[in-house]
Structures are given as structure tokens and as C-alpha cells.
Length: 566
View 1 (tube, one colour):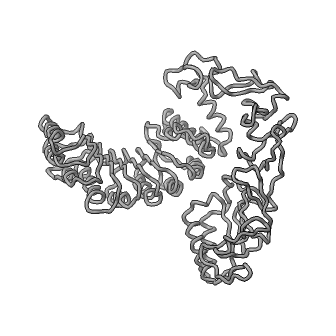
View 2 (cartoon, rainbow, N blue to C red):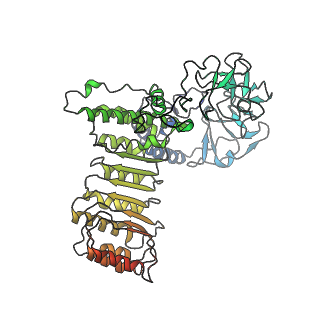
View 3 (cartoon, helix red, strand yellow):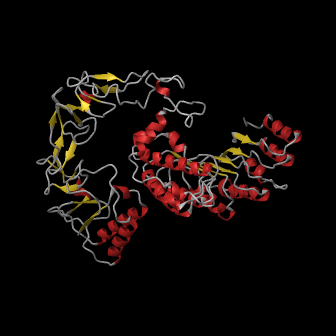
């Protein structure tokens, strides 16, 4: 009646990122769905690993399971209730598997001081009041609630004499123990919020100790706050965040000391970026690709080094993503190395797997440049990008760019910006791309730069965008900012660009036509359209085939009384 796919014991704390199950989520969902398809199953409760939380297939199966439960006409387990369990609006006890309907869930038990069900803050499992009793930590931010099997041992701070559950590293109830005297200190006293700090962590050996047990001193670097214990200072300590007063090559203090690779023109080799990467890579679960793998394949030494640099950037980025406090936008952007395109190699697939598994919780900007995204890699990236990122850039990534873009647009409702440049033309799927953009709730900034080398093809690309995004009444409140630069666009006398501006639609706010093959005739048509346009905010047309005649047509239109264009 119950299946638990998590890797935790009955009262084991739920981790932020559980270890991935050896079972494939596709296999598990297929098996569970077969139970529902059979028409009769005693299954009442299923627990999934946290790593599967955003998986669409798992979410769909949960909906199917809720509908199945509702169709079984199961009565509420609460005495004298009589209601039937409906889909979604119920809870199931992890221990006895009794189901309670929604109205009964809200009933308060004055004796136990809790609702009918108790959700434990430690194991994150729901149990009814008949199977457990409610335990509470008074020091947690909002009052930590635990089941009877999970209540941590309460500890008392020797400094402020307050009681703390010590359940985790949280500021409100976390504690620190001195490595020398084993005295307990609360988080507030550690940082001096309840007076003078009474315990500190050494920046070198990472031990937490009382200043009364051992002396602490600053590292000695300019404007550096790192503290080092007497056992470590000054020997065997290299501060990763300052130059420690030794550098005369690249500033001081928080600017850090960089090497030639990280900052061209700096010859000092003691680099804080490089040393930090080295520390990160100690925790990477996979070994490096052996050098012998690249030999005898006709690859230049420069190309092999570029692959190794990219692989190192991916490894560091993966580890940073798994430690949210360490995510560095510089390293995320470094995945776009802007050199010769690196071709796909099967040896990199395990590293892509590690990267995509760590990417699922990232909600920032992401870009790939000059790296071929093979279909196998796209299959891994697609689900990882479905619910997280807000901006995606794909530069010189191969023919699969449009398949990945369409997939992300369709699955990720938070995406706001998409840039695709220097990728092979895929006109057979251009209509699908623009249709998905039109249907998206937030995606309004679209860049398609250097994806067409033929003039007529480039113009056809714009025509499709106009039809899908700008024509008709879509009912969308989005204001588009479109970039079609570098597509060798030639109109051959057609006026679709001018028509898009003439409509005076608030949908089009910016249009970039830089580095195409537009002529004076196009400029004159666009100029005429601008005279009555009051909504377009930005138009770029430099590096086209314009003479003074075309420039004058645009200029005269911009300064005309009816044009509010700036």
C-alpha cells in the first residue's frame, strides 16, 4: 500500500539535495502508471526523492494518482465524518496510511495543541495525531514543529543560557561546539548578536573554537576579515580572498590577486581565482579526461587546451551550483569562451550529466558559446532548463540550437530573454520558434543574429516573425524587443519591415536591423512609416547599404512633427 523511493530512514532529516536514486525516474513512473492502468491497486501513498520534484512526468503521475484516489470513493478516516476523499484535498498519514478529508484537516486539537495532521520540520513527513505527538522548539524562527521520533536534543548556550534544538545550521536554532572544550554556543552568540562573540571559526583549519581556549588573529591582509587560530597563523595559510600584503602587481584587498590567465597583463602566478578553483575541484565526483584520449586524433595543442579549459569551467560551475552561496556570474558566463567551436565528444557526456543535475535549482542567466550541443546533450539540458533560468544565450552551438530553444520556451514559463547567434539556419522550424514565442507569457526579448547567410532567407525570417508576433490581435500585453542583425537581409522591394512599423502597434518597442543589406529604398519606406509611429522606442540600422539619401529619409522622419521616436 505504500512505496517510498527516497533514500532516507523513517526519522532521518530531509536534505536540501538528496542523493539521486539508482532507479530512473522514467522507469519508476512507468511502473507506477501501470498500477493505475490496471484499474485496481491498494496503493495509497508514494514518496519521491527531492531531486524529482520538478520532473514533469512525476508531476503528471501525481495528478493521475489523485484522480484515481478520488474515484475509489474512500471514506475519511476521522470518526463521525463520512466525507469521501476528493482529489488533492486530503492528507495521508505516513505511518498508518489513514486518509483525512480537507474539512477535517483544519480542525484543531486542543489537547495535543496541533491540527489533525503534523508535518515534521525535520523528516518532512506527514503523520496523524494518533501516530505521533507534536514536539516544538521554542527557539526556531516560527516555532519548529517535529514529530515525536524526530525532536532533536535541546541544547543550552553557555553564554546567553537560551535553549536551542540544534536541528540544523539555521541562525535561530543552530549551535556551535568548541573543538577543544566542547562548550555549546548558539548562532547569535557566535556572531555577537547577543554581545561579544564567544566562539570563532578558523579560516585555515576550519575548526570552531572559543577565544578563551585559543588565541585568534586577523590574517594580516589589507581590509581582510578572515581570522586564524594560533595553531595555523602564520604557517600553512594562504588567504583566498586577499593578497595578504604581498602583492605589488594587482592592487590590494578585495580586488584579489590574479594571474595572467584570469587577468591579462598580470604576471604574478599566485592567483586567488585559480587556487579557489583547485579547492573546488577536490570535491568533483569524476576524474579528468586522460590526456591519452586526445592524442592521435589530429587535434592541435591549442584546441586540446581549449577543451580542457572549458571542461574545467564546467566542473567549477557544477560545484558552485551545488553550493548556492558560491554561484559566481563570472563563472556562469565563462561557459561562453568565444573561441573556435569545440566539437562534441562522448568523453564529455558524464560531465554534462553532472552539470545538468546541478542546474535544476539555478534561476539566473545562462549561456553557451562555441560549444557543439549534441542531441544527447540537448536531451539532458532540456528538462534542466525547463523550470529555472530567466535568460538563455546560444552562440555557435550547432544545428540543435532551435530544438533546444523551442523546448525551453515551451516548458519554462519564467523565460524573459532568448539570444541565438552564429548558428546554422533552420528555416524549416522558424515558424515553430516564433509561434512558441508568441504563446509564451513573459518572453519578449528575442535575438536572432547571424543565423541566415542568404539575403532572401534572412528577409523570410523577419516575415515569419512579423506574422507570428506582430500581426493581428494576439491579446498579449508583451512589448517585443527584436534583434535581427547580421542576417544579410535584402527586401527586393518588399515593404514588410515598414508595414510592421506603420501599424503603430505598442507590441513592437525595439527593432535592431544592424549589419544587413537594406538599401535606400528600404530606408525611405521605413522613414515614411516612422512619421506616424508613436510607440517604437529604438531602431538600429547601421552597417547597411545606405547612402546619404537613405540616411536623410530616416533623419527627416525622426524630426517630423508626427513622430515621437527618440
